[in-house]
Length: 93
Image (cartoon, rainbow, N blue to C red; front, side):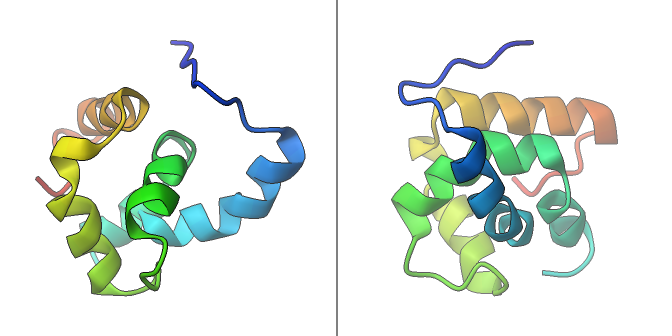
């Protein structure tokens, strides 16, 4: 599946945000989400747009993304759907 964004990330930008995006996605299922590359790439822009002032290692980041779930981009929603299919619906809803 090819995801097209309105502003494609350059490789150097993607490599710079990957560590932060890794942390984006707390313990248990939330930690597994943070380590999922599909969620990292699909939801990094949403994290920076909606939760930039929140420590990505905190439960506040999880709450921020959940609070803004209706405002997530189609790319992020698709990444969450793909993650749920691969893991049997284990993303936090």
